[in-house]
Amino acid sequence: MNPDKLAKELDSVPRFPHTPLQIFESLKNLLPMVAVELLITRPDRSFVLIEKVGTSGAWALPGGYIGFNESPEDACRRIAKRDLGMVLSSIIFFKIFNWPEGSLRSTYGHALSLLFQCKAKKNIKHGKYFKKIPAKVLPHHAIMLNEALLAQ
Image (cartoon, rainbow, N blue to C red; front, side, top):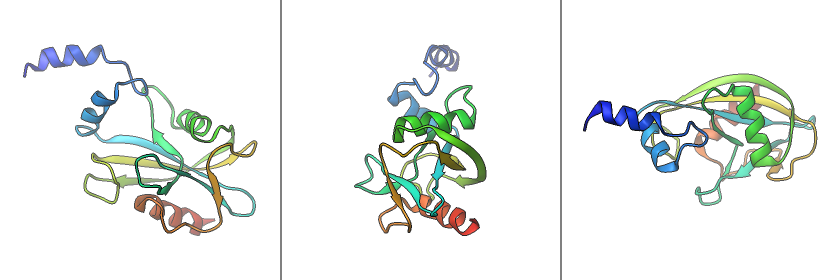
């Protein structure tokens, strides 16, 4: 493999979130990826989860990777619109979680999750509100939920 040729080819790849999936999957195995996770709550302490595609019906926090030159807050807004069909009225950083490869995450690669506590301007169009963490939730999201909900 010629590193100069590979670097030149990679320079022509569209920046995330427009990176082709095959290239993105290869890159995430080389570098830690940074994701945002949204804990959207209502005054009654209920919170939103979505059914995550490809996880056998497991529930998850809405979330995704931060795009190139995208702020974490802008990523939160993009993900809320994409996953829930809604606009956020408040976005407050809660905590960073480190998920090295081989940890509880169901995918490969090293990731950092920035958990944000959010409020919505309107009701969600997709997803479901819960008052308790369901049994079938992604394991690493259960950790984040337990920690954040105890802090409220």
